[in-house]
Each structure stands twice: as C-alpha cells, then as structure tokens.
Image (cartoon, rainbow, N blue to C red; front, side, top):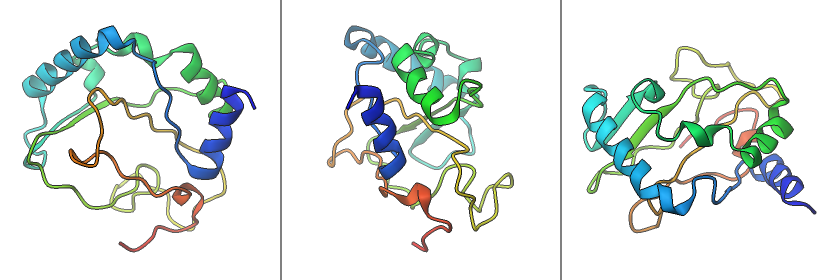
Length: 160
C-alpha cells in the first residue's frame, strides 16, 4: 500500500492520520516562535484562561502559509475532499503550561454548540478536514490532543 493509500485508508477508518515532515525540522522553532508572538499580540481576550487563541490567524502571521499547500498534504486533501477543496479558516490555539485540559468536543460541522452546525443524525459523507500543526511535542505529560478513533463516522455525538 502506498503512503497516500495508507493515509486515505487510515482517515477513512480511524478519522485521523499523522503526516510528518511537512514543515522542515530546521524551520519549526522559528515558526513556533512567530506563532507564539503573534498569538500573544493578537489573542482573543475572551479565550479561556491558559489558552492563547487567534481565529483568522493567517491575517496576522503567514509564517506557516508556505506549508498549507504542501504537495503530500494536498494529495491527502484531494483524495479526501476532491480537487476543489479550500482552506476555510486558520486558527492558532496554544495551551500554556498549567492549563487544565478542556472537555471533549467535536469540530465543525458536528459541534452542536456552534451556531453553524449540521444537526444530527449526520450524513455519511466527508464534509470537513481539520489539520493540526504540532509545533511542539505532544506527550501524555504535556496534554497532547486526544481523539476518539472512528468517531467521525458516528451518526450522533457521544454523550461525555
């Protein structure tokens, strides 16, 4: 199975896949520094305590922009959503040290707390793909993102 087919199968079955090396390792520190500074300067004052959050982040900082359309990433996007997929938004979220883990949630279009959601039961079609750019190591100790494999194909959200 090729890398692309493995990625697409993993997305189809589990709902997630790690694509390593999109940002060259020698650029990660500089981009992380820029993202941290831009988030501090433009952060949402209504964000929860311990979180730096900037919706529409690319308006303020384009340091990661060259990687958004990386050829390997776009193969996966095109294989999942088709060739007319578009980036709908970019958000910077930084969980600062000591921040308590947030509650379980679903991203758009499944989060029933968002005004622009799709009501359940959800259709059996791919409507959205979220990319998460890990600019620092995610570990159990620092509270990396948790996922529920296969939850992307459930017709309704789990009650947690």
